[in-house]
Image: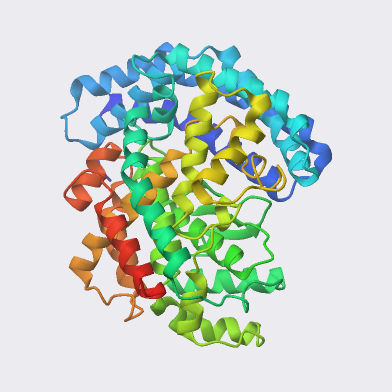
Length: 496
């Protein structure tokens, strides 16, 4: 039994109530999206809104502030106790600047908006969602003003999801990768060899496809005694405890949709499931940030799940469930990596994916700064898709209604997807230096998971995101690895 100071024990006791509320809100949200009957919407929204208010009250009261100050005063800077205090001090600063009325209003509006979004998306009815988006973007601006900013209204919003990130960081990242990615995409279109994916671009039995995805995740190393996988309108992963990870995969009429989204959420699940047991019930449990989290989901989805080694291992099992898939591992590898810009972000190929994110980043910043009105969002969305991807969505369902994020008020989130892509390739370059460039050809998925456990998952929230990336890779996040990786991979596939 590790001895802890009375001050630290008091802090963890107070935090335990917040942790329990977080788990309750997560469970209610998971249930709402997976199992809850539609008639429970109003009551569920009221329950979550009250819990959010309770959480805000517990987090910002004087007793917790004093407990954090006591631990800060007696802890060495490099200790676990100091890291716990640092994480809570950041949240105290952020949440303490937000009035409880704003917290409850966002919870209530986003709860209602989510239900409207589901119907609006199904019926191609943007006007139905418009007033909710107007209110949620207004709440986002109010949130930024309450937290405070010096340079850009987007700064405090992106910082909520990626500590230390700014609008300038995101803008510089997109400016660095847009040109090379667009050039690669153009080369594939104009000079690339054709890739056949017709044998996976069809409707498959979804329960059997989910069973395959679950089998593959289990074989790679996910512990289904401490997690589960369900089908839901939008794929997500939520953490109730490191022994209770809830993942969902989205319905799809394309094999790549369910397989890719399942492996994507598995990456998130790995991060949470392998959080150190000693961090459980403390603010250090789980992933450090959205970008680092996304680096794990994209690493497992794209680098591992779309590799030759993965399909040499798992294609026979897939064909045993679907004998009509007549191809070999090389054909499957090429099909899973086919580059063809489409309307839907979550079904996008790896090359054009970050252009989808660029559209969303630019639009939400333009809405926040008054350059684009919500009423003009469909037109602005389509114009950017035409310019960046060379395609124009024929409906709002395939356009600005496709993502759930804005209907939940998660504004400032989107750039973390691309940040995660950059970090995933950066980490993979270091992993292969240690394990060998042929680690996937050897189908040594256990060593991949073990390396990530040691370097990333075991760290929890001990370090701020930028420091963790530098500790793991030896340098801050930058685009060299991903641009080189995409050029090498798709240059070889397409012969350019």
